[in-house]
Structures are given as structure tokens and as C-alpha cells.
Image (cartoon, rainbow, N blue to C red; front, side, top):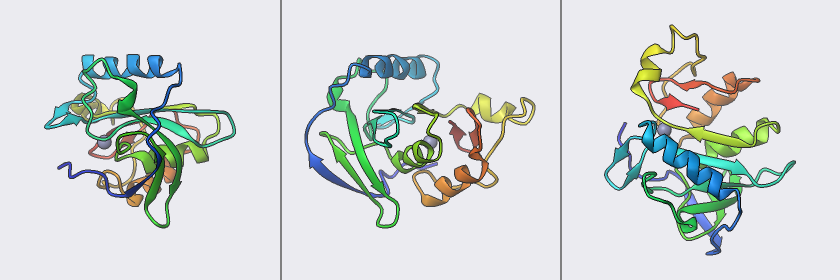
Length: 173
Ligand SMILES: [Zn+2]
């Protein structure tokens, strides 16, 4: 799958870098993703994105920025606060210094549909994909390109109460 950047328009409400203490934990998981090759590097970044919900009963979240390498000891400016995703006009309203991950719509949709979920991690692993059927891991029904509403819709169809699933021919969440 070729990466061509984010597929929505980012609206910067401010350039305020997130300061949340929980970023230390998110950074830890970013480094684990790198260590276990769950977010394989590509030119200019790592193919994976991680986020957490900021507060209960709200759907705002802090997510890895687009085109960042997860191997780095990440500074907070590599993360972005997403205040709102407008699915109809393809705009993401953020605070920070970078564009948010290309899968921000996917994260947003999961937070909206599953109030019990507070952290989302998406990565890529050919080993997991190859063994999905044998391990009986639920997959989306069709292959969708990354960062699209089609992908979001496919996930909404299977999400239910799953905590781990596969995006067909793409990766895991
Ligand atoms: Zn992906």
C-alpha cells in the first residue's frame, strides 16, 4: 500500500503541543511497536499510529503525528491533539505542530462508537495477517485504502465489542 499522505484537510486551531503526562505511556508503546516491527519504517516515518482518549465521555484524543518515526525517543511535538473530526467535510480540527495521523478518522470513529475504549493502537504485521484465519481473528470484509471513509465504515460493521481485529490485507487494530 503506497503512502501518499493524509487524505483529509487539517485545520489547526492552535499550535499548542500536547502536554499530557500519559504521553509517556504512549511513547513507551510507540517504542514497543518499533521494537517488535509492528510499525515498519517507510521513507519519512513509521507505518503505525497510536492514540488515547483525553477524558471520559468525550471523543477528543491525542494521536501520533503523520510521518513520524516511532523509533525516536519522541518529543511531545510529534503528537497532536484532535478536537474534532468532521466526517462530512473531511476536516480534522487539531492543536499541535504536525498533521495528525492519516488514520485519525478511524480512531475518532472507534472512540465515538465505543465509549469503553480509551486507547487505540494500529500497526502492520505480515505475520499477523498471514495467521489471521488460523487464529480466528475477525477481519473487515473488504480491503479499503488507508485513511478513507470506506475503511471507517468497514470497521464500524465488524467492531461490535471486539478489542482486536484486522483490516483486511492491511494491518491490525
Ligand atoms: Zn495502516
